[in-house]
Amino acid sequence: MGAVQRFVEAEADFEVASEESVLPDDRTHAVATSELALSMTRPEARQVVERWLAEARIARDTLRFALPPSRGDLGPGDLIRLDQPDMAGTYRIDAVEIGPYRIAEAQRIEPAVYRPLDMVDEVPPAFDFVPPIPPLPLFLDLPLLSGQEQEHAPHLAVTAAPWPGAMALYAASGGEDFALVGLYGRPATVGTLVTALPAASPALLDTGAPVQIRLSRGTLQSVSLERLLAGANLAAIGDGSPEGWEVIQFATAELVAPGEFMLSRRVRGRNGSDAEMAPTHPEGSYFVLLDQSVEQIPFASGDRGVQRNYRIGPARRAIDDPTYVAQAHAFRGQGLRPLSPVHLRLTPSSAGHDLTWIRRTRIDGDTWDGFDVPLGEENELYRVRVRNGSTILREAITSEPRWSYTTADRTTDAPPIGAELEVTQISARYGAGASARLSL
Image 1 (tube, rainbow, N blue to C red):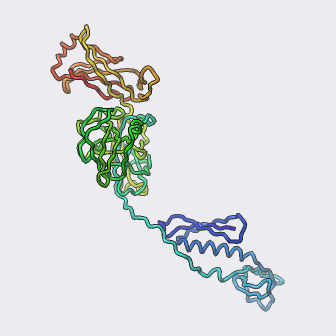
Image 2: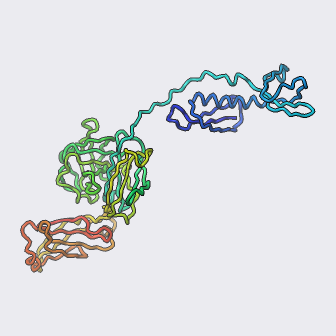
Image 3: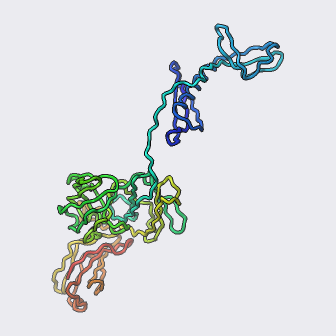
């Protein structure tokens, strides 16, 4: 018979452990398991389980005999020793029946079983103490990346150095009614820009000067052009607020110092985020690698635009622990936002000028099988504005990708030099999407 002893290991963060043993000449496959709510070392637990097995085997030898009246002093717990060859050994009396005769029941014991053995102490693995510290959480309201996400749900990147273990995310609609909504077991790869990143043409390979970033933890690697075109090395750059993240890709990551990389051969404004491309991303802007550690948070579509309270901290700590970070955010759901139109053209016509454009889609835009890319919205609808800075000179709604700016309307508007035409696709769920502009 084999035996398994479960116990609390004293030198391994008091985790539940087990030791097992089997008699060398025992052919049975039976296993007996016991649990002790005791803290002990592994050698101590091994002695316990081996003594248990030895006791169980020795206890198979039992005696039942009658005691003479002259030995009325013997009772349960007393030891006797027999010298007969077939019964030689030490026995412990376990029970005595009182009747016409005093019948004793005894089982054999071996005192040597209870003597401690010389065991080799195992050196438990040493773990560095990781003090719990407040994490750095970054909420990212991003456009659709793979098309498999929830369109309205934001992402969360959380990191800490050192990483104390899983992070817990609590959310509340208001007040203190916080509920656990997610656990994050892997730290995100987060850093900051060491050098500024100027704007560039979106969706084209940018071969300009490399940008230097400094990571708080993690690493980056270069990829081939084929893998880049397949979607590898996606990252987001922003100021840390939920909105305004530009999604980029990079093919080359060159390590120049511990934790610092030079990124080159970039693709800017990915997935319709060209609307968030600032004239310059300044030094200190956040960099987040969009890998599997950056996950969407549970988020209902009806909560868009509603400010909610969040607390993020080590999962092993209570929600009111000082290591928890409190933030409040309202998300619009950028995955629902229509992309800006492209290729705006203004051509003369008999009535004045015709403005035309090409629609982009936020879903399944890379398929080439259909006549056109999917609409992605309930209806095709556009808003056209004539703007002079912040002043709106004219606004119109059209259901097709063209609009006529008649000579009479232009005379009425009298747009000055520098005025612009602005075209925006409208979504029934999101509202006005990203805009494209053409100077008059």
